[in-house]
Length: 125
Figure 1: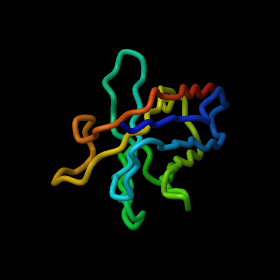
Figure 2 (figure 1 turned 120 degrees about the horizontal axis):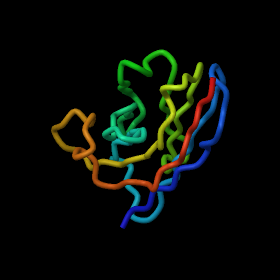
Figure 3 (figure 1 turned 90 degrees about the vertical axis):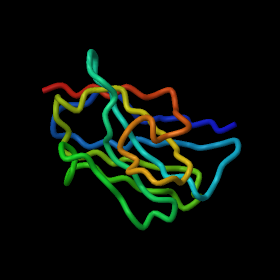
């Protein structure tokens, strides 16, 4: 089994920066594609960012491109999401997810096999 635990959420003012962390434990694999999703109240879970197993390629949703950065930790069992210039519309529960390699684009929740419980981010203006 694989466990993912997110941390780093909180209450911040618009324009602030924050970094979310995701720790992976259990049956870890160096081949996992790691992703971040978010879900705002009353909305569907949406793709935010993804990173390949070697960290060589990253993908971002248009609303966060240029403001968020996804990174893999040196230990390979952590992944981070650096959020800059936060906006009120970034308010959501942020989820970390891991996917076994397959022929998908890794932008849909169904593309992922393992999920964390989420961390709440609230941005006020």
